[in-house]
Length: 102
Image (cartoon, rainbow, N blue to C red; front, side):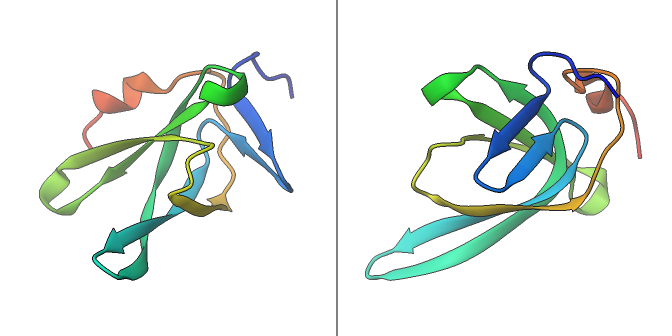
């Protein structure tokens, strides 16, 4: 399978591909405490290269409300990213999912 130039990202020991179902574990700092918050959704975009790489993750919340989050991959707030399910799309950006009603 061939991938476009900007739809795949390799970090540490895993490969993130556009269309994957991912769980982003983010550190939340509250006063003196730190906790981990999990955001699970579809990876719809990988932007830029080098230091400024960002990923966009989209999930459907309650009552069909869509939530999108954008993270820089080099952010110290990201604890880790796990891939729950591999996706199989032929597009580099999955912006057409914004128009679909699930």
